[in-house]
Image (cartoon, rainbow, N blue to C red; front, side, top):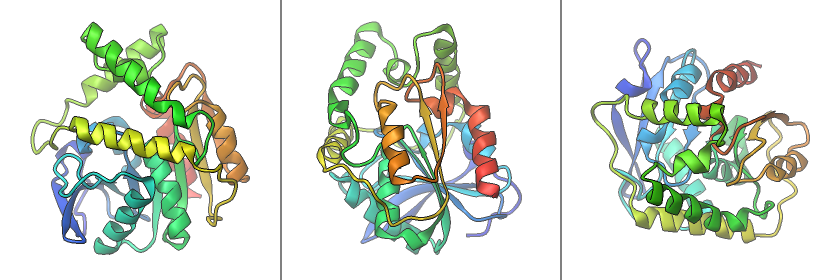
Length: 282
């Protein structure tokens, strides 16, 4: 597909690509210039959970594709129960879209899927960005279930979106960033994705749990440039995972943000966009 002019994230049409007989949703926006940047979202996220400020910033000078997951939102099929299967779907979807060389940005669980994509098909990716993510067997990843459940319960008790507790710090700056982020998620008025079901949440948490129980990965066949982004106060994927990823990708650039949690990308949207665009231009 060729983009005409500049398309903003909130105006991008929700489209589908067929993988093994199953339709997977995606949105394409930005300009036709530059190597395409494919973005993989976090656990329990549909296409509407993409942060418009971040995505429009990244799409200022390139084509961006936000790709959904099988069985999530308006995508067909059953949600995948492993990171490896999710990565296989990504590789197949990119082939169906005619994308044979890309830059790849994975957030949280999306970063785990991205690592598996470059493990299965390293020749596909030029540059890799991982935010708030960890390697297979990474520190405390197998404990994510308890953290997630605790945040969800706290949100239910206080009638508050659980991402407020899971993604952001409880400082004044973190609370302000959480309110701004949740407001941005409502900017898209029409053609919205379907809600994420409890089954998706349970299945994806289990997939991350199994990822965390794997033997610690210490090498990767991917030799391209890597940018790592992490919040110093991330409770969901603790900061020790950034160091573990740095051992796998020893030449990676690492940016750690103070007073930032799991939602480091949205809490530091402007800084992240500047860093990411600079990295992708190299």
